[in-house]
Length: 226
Image (cartoon, rainbow, N blue to C red; front, side, top):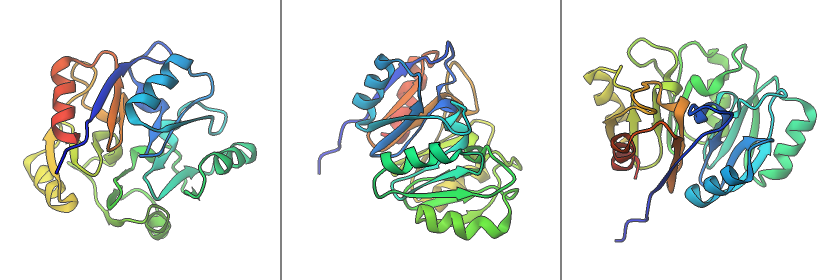
């Protein structure tokens, strides 16, 4: 059985290497800011092998903070404007799009998910857990990581592996390995930043990382997620 190539490319947007806060992706689409340069669009399309969708949420470019997505669905906060929602629906085909009416808007920091399983931060209102489960089409568990609620910031997961912050302990690593049924590796982004998701996006085909990411960090990302 052949293993498909996993590509990785470093970029910068708005003068920062914290590219993960501005973008989100699954295996078919990448959501990026409206005013993203064409060069960046092209890097994302070629590396992740996706269609680029350019938009704002609540007139903000922070799509990687406000969006949770996998191949089954997209979760967005209630701050999305009607015209933005309509654009999203037109652009994403048959993908499930659900507004999560939580009091928290930075939902990507609070949910860690691939195409089969997901973790939801304990601070998200319990009445919305089934809504998240139905939209993303995954098995869910409510849990923190190392006592921290920002579980979506501490790790990046695809269907091949889990790259997780060095802030976690061995118990968390064991749990993540058993829960997702995947290899788990410790890594950082952008020269030692432990909030991994802030500096990268990834799907099953590749990863886009901040341009401060070292060669060793990129090698580690490829080992775990590729």
